Image (tube, one colour):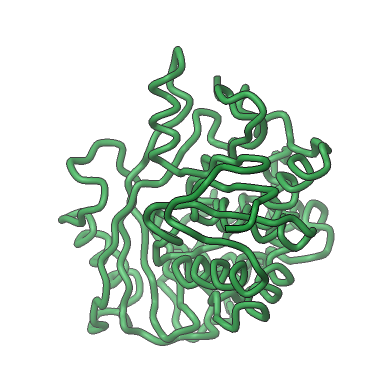
Length: 345
């Protein structure tokens, strides 16, 4: 092996994205993960890249907006280098409005989006959203935003890994720690770190999801009854996910997924006869602060950490990769204070 300028521990979405961005800036990179790319929760199937509501603006929402707007260019470069599809598409999202209170909130947020999203995307309230299939709306109204996007998480990790290899990087199951070391080890790493600190810095939250043989390739994703319904570019549709704090097996599916599938089929009857082609479960890393944990490692002097991308990891990844490359390669700290490890200590 050639020597590395940057070693990333963990081949999930944060680890691979940081490695790719560092490599694009001229660094020699090595990614180490015993399970290979996307072995943990990043190897999932849902891939809803959805923004927070455009109100009560803060650093986390601003960071997420920048990342979502970076995503198209980021994934286009990855796909060009790898010649694999990540399944990315900024197809938008539709949500039914449930009651009069929700309608007033949704209408107020239209103005918030116009201001806070800087004209880069819209949030509209309409009775005729652009979707061939719609869940019922008790009010007859729907929210349609054009900022939400989708990708296929597992395919995206494979595309990143191949892009790294195509341009001279290493993605290995074991290897030497050389250069700057970044820990991006997901739920397992977060749990282990919590056990070494005076109080927990984060934990793992189990999610279950399903993939259906149902093609609506260009349709917006739907958010209904707390459930994401995401049409993928490969002709499947993902539904998910649960959020479980108590579980017996982190990667086993059970009746809770059956309930999720039934909820989706009730919300969108067109799914009723669609075959379930995959059932998935995994443990997602959630930091104590609920924001990504980025910066200097709290226990390993001179090393770095990027973890805690619970539910928003793929949407945050392009911007996370940028600010971590700034820090690791150039010593420039552009990380919001609320994202630094001390915010979770």
